[in-house]
Every structure is written in structure tokens, then in C-alpha cells.
Amino acid sequence: MISFAFYALTALLFAAALLVILSRSPISSVLWMVVAFFAITGHYVLLNAQFLVAVNLIVYAGAIMVLFIYVIMLLNLNKSSQHKASVMARLAGIVSGGLLLTVLVAALRRSSEAAVGDLAQVGQTSMVGLVKPLGLALFRDFLVPFELSSVLFLAALVGAVALGKKGGVD
Amino acid sequence: MGAITLNHYIFLATALFSVGVAGVLIRRNILIILMSIELMLNAVNILLAATSAFKGDSDGQVFVFFIMLVAAAEIAAGLAILTMIYRNSRSIDINHYRNLKG
Image (tube, rainbow over all chains, first blue to last red; front, side):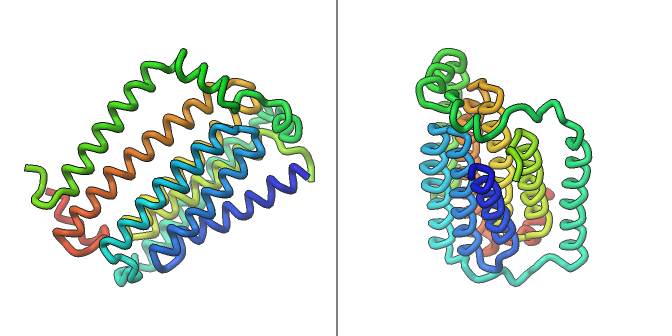
């Protein structure tokens, strides 16, 4: 049952990911990206990573995708791009991606050391994904990076507003 | 169907990362390229979360949280740059951005 859910979510994830990079209009790419994020959230459910389930839905499927849709709407970008890459460039891109996949799979094929545990047990017994252990780790071991990331967020916010303002940065 | 081990997640993340790389290489639309970068970041997220759950160590999932923060900041700044360039050149095709060569 668990493995069936894993394979079903994986198939949905890859179908959605391929449609993101292949579909003609940007808005359907964004909508397939939302489907991909839901499949990824399903994977987090299987891993019993409850905090990541919530954060993934809110941050990715909620905030980031809404940002994409707003930009498409505001700039009226939904006409499919007239200037496609040349056939050679697309072929080279697909071959490069496939070669990367081949090399990585060949390099990782023998990682039998990683074959510990079973998702059916891990999904039942894993407690590391709950809010309490993650909160303890975040505010005890990773407190300084957490505070620094808030500064990064502030900088990104100020930068986005300064860039998006009419009249430029000066 | 056998048991799902960590190896399954390694290959899942590898394949998803490759889809993202192919998307960056074959598309000329900046929005799609940004989304392909998101796909790559999410491949890493899945791998970190799976490793953390299988090994029983919560540090990996904390790093997923940080990656999400960085991705949100990156998308906010990237889309602001996109709108600014679109106002200047009326295009989101990266072939038109040759003037960035300086």
C-alpha cells in the first residue's frame, strides 16, 4: 500500500514536472508546477514530515506560485513565446539532461549502504519530522542561521521593492 | 512491489533534478527557467527530507526549511528583476538579454 502510494506520487510528480518544462503557455506551466508541489507534499506525508507538509503547501504552493501567477497576469505574459530555441539547442539540452541523469545514476547505483530501512516502517515510526523536534533543532542548534535568514529575507524584500518601483533604483 | 528504501529516493531526486536541468537548457522563457530552478531545489529538498527521516536525524529537515527560505527570497528578487527588464525590453525571452554582456 505504501509502495503503491510512493510509485503513484512519483508518476504524478514526473508527469507534472515534464509538463512544466514542455507546455506551451506559461500559465499552464505554473498550474502543473502546483500539481508537482502537491505530489512533493504527498511524499513528505509518506515520510511523516508533518512540518514540511505544512510549510511546503503554504510557502511553495501558496506564496511562490501566487507570485508567479501575479507576474504573468500583471505583465500579460500568457502568449506563448514566439522565439523558441532552435531544434539543435533543444536537442542539445535534452541530451545534456539525459547525460547528467545517466552519469548520476551510474555513480549512485552501488550506494547499497543507503539501502537501510523501509518506508513502511519509517513512515510509521519516524518522529524527526514533527514540529517539536524540528523546533528544538531550529531554535537551539540553528538559531544564528535562522536569525541571519531573516536578514536575508529583509534584504530580498527591500531589493524587490526597490527594483519593482517605477523610476528605478536611483 | 518491494520495500521502498532510501535508494528509491536517491533516484527520484536525481531524475527530478535532471528534469530541472533539461528545463533550464531547452526553454528560452525566463519564467519557465525560474520554475525549473524551483524543480531542482525541490529535488534536493526531497532527498534531504528522506535522508533525515530514514536516518532519524532532524537536521536534514531544518535544512529543507532553510532552502525554502532561500527559494522564496530568490523568487521575489528574480521576479522583480524580470518585471524591470520586461519594462525596458518588452520581452521575457533570454535571447533578447544579450545586452547584459556589457
